[in-house]
Image (cartoon, rainbow, N blue to C red; front, side, top):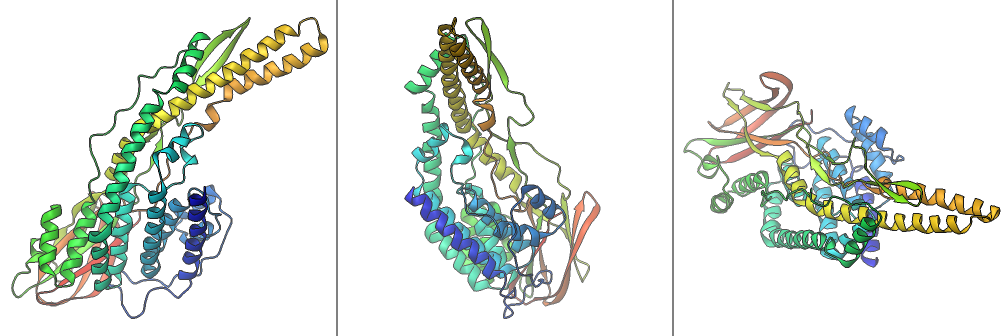
Length: 483
């Protein structure tokens, strides 16, 4: 509990940081961004959080209203999720100074929560709900936080900062990721053991003796894919080294992580300069609840002359592919050189992998709750029925017993359903895809046009002017379209 309070206090400080950072006047004037012109952000006010209004504001492009509602939230077990959202909203608004600092602070909060998290902490959800556990961020979100830090630095032309981020990555990040993976493995193992516990077996037997049997065989299988590392982060890392003329480290990093299509980034052709155009498109796909839109499965048990309905609803997170508006990106330089951007990473896949890894454990915990709570509810109904039988012949006692029985029956029917919701929390505003087009061109100043397409139809166009390419040097342009 002390650790949780410490984390929540930290979140107050971090959320306060968002408000103060966003009112400093925007992008550092000493470093002109190389992407679309950065807009001066407005001051973020505080506004009472309302989920429906929040969703509508984002759909309408009113990111200031979204940030105001995030700033108006009271710190709770979901604060890291909303910190990630605030960071991305500032990035979308081109407030790269604050987004870069924000992602650093958010990663620190995720790290603190993960370091104090144990399998036992998560197992407490077996008695409550998945969302009773403080959200500490998925593995792919750790990589994305670092990637967006790099993107923020590149937007501000802060090549030295990008190099510093890579130094931190090599020094600390990989060890922390390995520790997180091990904890997730322990959680999955403990979740399975929960169904082998004496408490679960006893509850199952009590239900069976009352005539109710819960199916335990339809557990989802764990996905075979694992999110070992982020292709987008590895690509940006290679660029970060090359931007600092550290081509040896760029080559070593690219070779270690299998970064493709960067040969001319590492070995720029003689007499040429190199331009890499990075395009972030769309909004990441969302996980959903396996129980959404489904009626609970009824189990009727006979108690005396009554047939009492109990209900089972086993839930876990699922990922359903969805349609995205942008599926192609085309880049054109002012010398009429054109290229179709190559896909670096589809982050929907990262969400799907994470969901498939966590679904079996969530299923086990939900099944445990269903069986134990229904068993307890059944015992209450039986006790109330005994009281009803004993009250026969006594009008006052019988009236009281009937009320107790009706309450017990009602509680039995609703004991599980209202609390059974899968954990669908995630950072909502990360990009859907990262793509890139590379050009080895003569030194000079270029205008870059980035067209975001659905098939061959232009959805949106971004233009970046005065991009200077020097001989033997790398330059990077980062663009984004949230449609």
